[in-house]
Amino acid sequence: MKILAIVNDSEESEPIEIIENLKEQSQVEVVRLNDENLSYDELIVKIEQSDKVMSW
Image 1 (cartoon, helix red, strand yellow):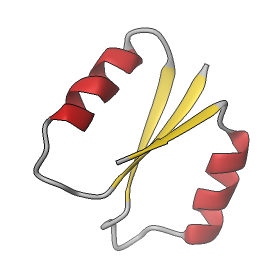
Image 2 (cartoon, rainbow, N blue to C red; image 1 turned 45 degrees about the vertical axis):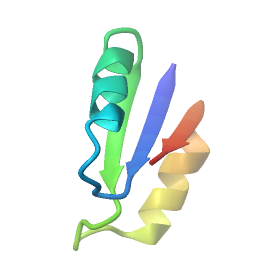
Image 3 (cartoon, rainbow, N blue to C red; image 1 turned 90 degrees about the vertical axis):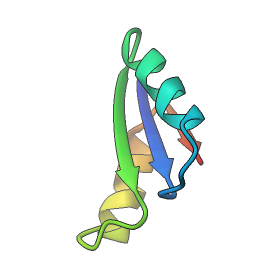
Image 4 (cartoon, rainbow, N blue to C red; image 1 turned 60 degrees about the horizontal axis):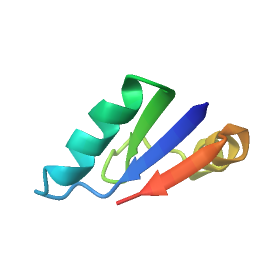
């Protein structure tokens, strides 16, 4: 399963722990919303290509 994790760079450790657990069973890509090089057009394509999208 291909999972896209969209993370708003917060101080919480819970999303990081969940993502690490998911990586054991699935293909996980992490996108950080505070990334200066983030292309919203590319983000839309990644969302469409993913089986599941999670955001924090």
